[in-house]
Image (cartoon, rainbow, N blue to C red; front, side, top):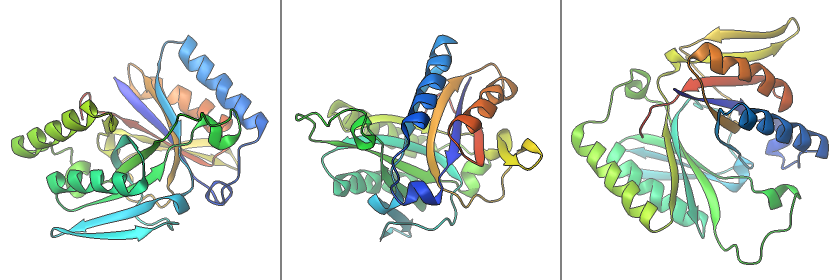
Length: 243
């Protein structure tokens, strides 16, 4: 089984603050621990929402809302990572995805690269940017309703085509929040509540994906993750085996 551990953003990250060397070192140490344990699948940070857009699709109409965003309906259902030359092209990919999915809300934000936070200079040959297109939860996704056969086939064709052209990097789909767990830092220490989560008003700031035998096993890493990334809240969600 695979699980995603996601932490929430804060005013400092939304203001574009660069992580301190100490924080970068702690995150690197945690990534090393996860890799040594053989459970690390992936992990990324996201840049401020001021660098992205929010897309709302309803009745075949698209509304584009430039960032920054205020926390509204931020419960995620899944995401795709894209590699494209511009934000506009990421928007067009998400629009093609919405044509398959129907009414949906998608946030697009740049993925944090090592040169964005001063670890290394940006390579001169890098001409594209990685973006996350994050899909918000719907009643269907929260009920774990699978895509019908035709939309599922259409989505597979979109992913296959854009993977072949180097645009699509990865797609993950989360199971309902009823199968998840939310951890919070409180005055009395770290506490958790099991899903479902009726609301989530804080945007994702970053995540790691781990393999684990159960939610309990994955959650052991969540407590460590919560402390390392200096956040007040982190969610653990089960991932589907296929998008």
